Length: 355
Image 1 (cartoon, rainbow, N blue to C red):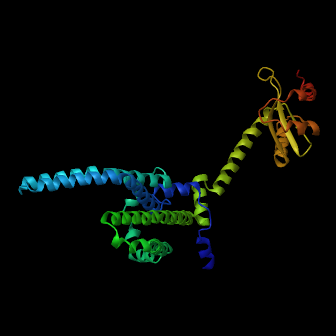
Image 2 (cartoon, rainbow, N blue to C red):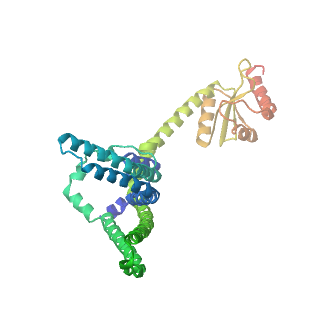
Image 3 (tube, rainbow, N blue to C red):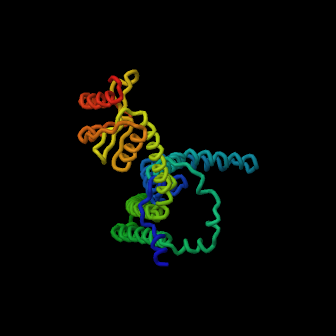
């Protein structure tokens, strides 16, 4: 039992195929905190520059509304007209913020995971409907991290608000003697400082969350030894089958090579460990070619086939060793011409032929 559990542990690093499959299924390391922090920060920054223009337009619209209120006739048509006018004005006021939010949301996702479009996460799965697995997810390590993260954000925001307010307590106590405009300006400034500090804190939390999401995804992608073996078999083939195929291919190649031995002119040996069969056909070859070669057991087979077919077997260890380095079916190098020519002349003399 312990051995089986050990085998199921995900200890192997994920392969590129595993990573690609996870990505195709939409399982990528992505932190929503990054999106939230960047969105909040960018909207706050835009709002800082856009606020004067926004306030001016809003005042203009409110002034128009109150100016026309006295002559406003309550009818179904006028109410629809007022509603459409209000929606239009607020759309004009808010479109920079909405557009910024959209672009930042897309950019934040693209920075984390690149371009990815998949519908697989939306496909229904039986495992998602399993109440037991659903309950297990509620008490998982990831769920615990989400709870800790939420508590951490609440605590950080609370500390920022408390410390900032306490640091400005002296000014707050003097607001009762200040004008309404000065009081509003101070509260706007204080709110801006608090929001800015919150943005920086959220960015810090987002970075920690992203690092954790990366770590968690790496852990999920890790493979058991069996999964790694199965993938290797799938992508590269069964090692045993590949071994058998190589053995069959080698045997077939040896058979084709052995069929060339009877057609050879001579077999040069070392005398037992190496055997090389040579052939020279003046009409077809510029130089003698290696028709068959082998060592040890294969060399013995070449010698046996040569003797059965009355092909001369000549012992010349240095030349046999040199010829064994020539590729099968290739012509011998020029530096061997003389030594091979002497042997072929001797063989042809025995057969009563001319070189």
